[in-house]
Length: 179
Image 1 (tube, rainbow, N blue to C red):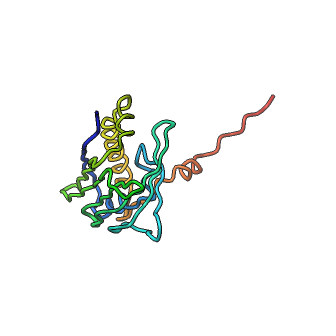
Image 2 (tube, helix red, strand yellow):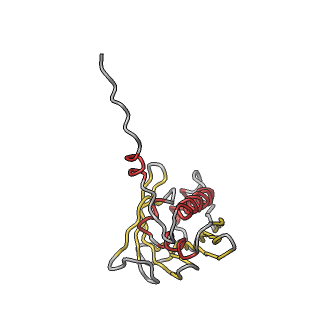
Image 3 (cartoon, rainbow, N blue to C red):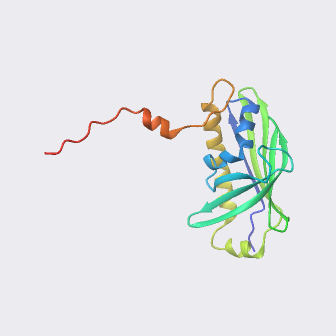
């Protein structure tokens, strides 16, 4: 029965490794980059990325929605951020990892996933919807959005792209006159 086993993609980003890490490790902003996870929040007392901290990711593909609980397994600023999706019994299902390597133009980020265990129902669901293809496409999209966000930042700190503020800054159009 088909099951996505692993995948990875990498991208070069013209930004400092620490700044890129800060974007990745702020899980509350995951929804700005991921085509699948539209929101995430810390669970319990966690408020920042550290090994053992947990967060909940809210995901969707089309009309299908689900939530996952994730546990951070690595949090080395400027180098690596990793977490594992765990089921309600604590069993690890999927490991996600971001490796950040400094280079001459900033850094290279490699995002990867590895399925550790897949429930039978999820394997059945993969027959009409190949998960591997979705995840590989999602990684490429996530990395492209990460690159755009990181390269927009200036002064050593990543800032949120505020679409509403940009829209508010546009000149107002003249109201249409009614005859």
